[in-house]
Image (cartoon, rainbow, N blue to C red; front, side):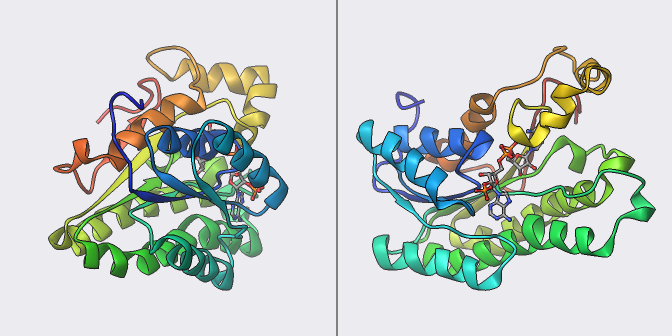
Length: 254
Ligand SMILES: NC(=O)c1ccc[n+]([C@@H]2O[C@H](COP(=O)([O-])OP(=O)(O)OC[C@H]3O[C@@H](n4cnc5c(N)ncnc54)[C@H](OP(=O)(O)O)[C@@H]3O)[C@@H](O)[C@H]2O)c1
């Protein structure tokens, strides 16, 4: 990726950077030269990644943040502003899915947590990053949705609704911020081997069901999602905005 994209002098924020897809995104952005603010709830995991990035010659900053908490998200934006003058790239990757079962039986607290972390947090972080991006006349916001946001499963209802809304928010942000030279795009991963999807990998029947729906008949790995995110973070995607790109082995097709 480093040979393809030049992100030198760019500052990125990656939420949910401590493991899985977010970790691969942070490593990919750093490999292309970006300074990366690493964010999630668990500081120890982020520090470990920061050490790895530093060992590879990259620069990063650890900012613990629960995306469901307004004060945490505000502190994340403020810390990056104070340290590096604000973010050129925001990757809204952190997400939660606390409930699996019949949609109409979703407990309200699970609904609220899902919407707060998956939707309200990305809205707030994008809003806080926007003024600086407008001032500089450039910026990239990349939302990580899911194939569930395109073709939902009833059992993942609240999560799927939040991910569909994130696709909608991508379009609204793209229209709102486009006149200022800011591109907003969305990546919708399919089944990817991470902790998040562990329950599906451990259940042979469910795994076969989900993999069976893909054209490629396999799951993805975090680096395959990160590659598209880094493209959306780069100048090579400057004429693309408001789009959702499915990286799902051909499970959903536009
Ligand atoms: N894996 C898949 O099959 C799949 C498919 C479609 C879409 N996705 C999407 O891809 C993105 C990344 O998922 P993943 O598979 O990489 O998951 P993962 O391996 O479980 O990683 C999730 C990351 O989010 C952080 N996180 C969780 N709750 C948070 C909160 N409230 N505030 C801040 N950070 C939080 C976690 O770190 P801490 O625990 O330290 O907070 C971790 O860094 C998500 O948006 C997910 O919806 C994944």
